[in-house]
Length: 94
Image 1 (tube, rainbow, N blue to C red):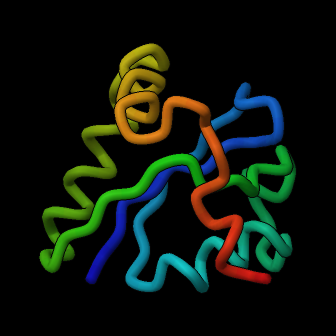
Image 2: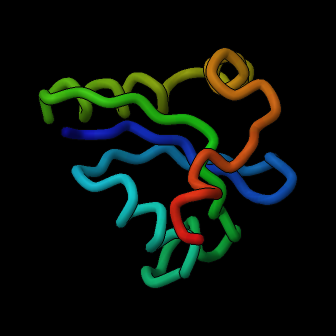
Image 3: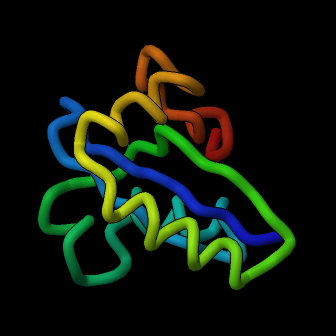
């Protein structure tokens, strides 16, 4: 499986869109700031949206598509799955 995912920071002002073949591991990396970059700098560590596919090319195309969207359209997408912007990975690491 491949995942297109959206992460946010504590107050939902910053979002990050990515693709991975292992969502749980990738979210762990974001939460624990194991990699340098945007998400570490802006403390983006809350999984607010994801979708899956078995096609890596489809996942990469979807990521590109979402990155081109306006912020409002991205917010609407997140709200359609997760209206409270809860951390969807909260139970994964307990």
